[in-house]
Amino acid sequence: MKVGILSDTHIPVVGKDLPEALFSAFKNVDLIVHAGDLVCTEVLDILSSYAPVHAVCGNMDPPAIKGELPEKLVFSLEGIKI
Image (cartoon, rainbow, N blue to C red):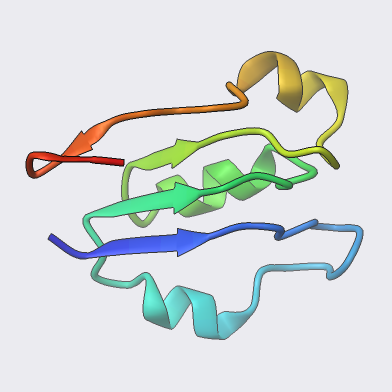
């Protein structure tokens, strides 16, 4: 299983869009983990078009995201606790 991991995208505060290199890297992943600081939910929509996404909120996320995503998330992946 191939997993793409990222965090601190801060879109659109830091940049207008996610970098093209990210799309190339995540082209064939089976799962994406976003470790917080999305800043906008559209990032989840974009990422989920590549693979299922597990995400948590970060300290820079607005209340709407903090209300939607957990602060911590534990799941098993091929028998490994993440």
